[in-house]
Amino acid sequence: MKDSRTAMGMPVTIEIVDSTSTLKDIDELFVYFEHIEQIFSPFRESSETCRINRGEILPENYSAEMKEILVLAEQTKKETNGFFNIETTPGKINPVGIVKGWAIFKAAQILEKKGFENFYVDIGGDIQTKGLNSEGKKWKIGIRNPFSNESGQELIKIVYLSGQGIATSGNYLRGNHIYNPLNPDRKLEGLVSFSVIGPNVYEADRFATAAFAMGKDGIYFIEKLPGFEGYVVENNGRATMTTSFESYTK
Image 1 (cartoon, helix red, strand yellow):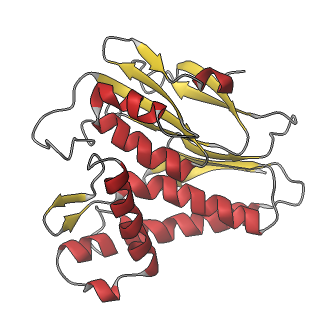
Image 2 (image 1 turned 135 degrees about the vertical axis):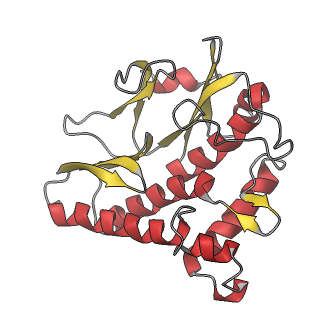
């Protein structure tokens, strides 16, 4: 069972290989994604994020999901020495840098609780895999060429995953939406994309965002993280990968 739609403002593809899957299983995930959008969207005036930023909700009245994200964001801030920070200005938050991977991970958990063992969930190129594809092989995932136009979908690298997550951060599609929290007024230069493979997509996503904000030092940060591999493309076209990244290309 496979379906592609739009959710959270991005293209979404879900494939469940298990023979017991139905369209209803996929429908439930899109209902879940809409729920997440209603909570975290910085563009919906009625979202919890916007209401928090307007001072309309006290911290003790935050939703369980918001409280979880705020804890995870603070943890990530500490683990990245401040290079990940959802606070845009004092008292204002924008959690999108952590919510996408987290939502994909939660969606995968929903499928796991249903007993599915072979699937992938893809939102805007960030992907959680589990088990094997319909051919009984690892999931084949392409890393997009950041220099190709949006319609081209040219790939610069193929990786094969089974159970891992992959996330790519960059400013080449949506403009300069990633910044260095330690120097927010300085435009990020030097990198165009940073892909991270981790034990799950949530972990990969949060560290990919932080690593991109670190600039050329980001690849060294990922190199030192146990269980993570990275692939970075500079604006001059040069690509650099961590020591064991190529173990995922076979």
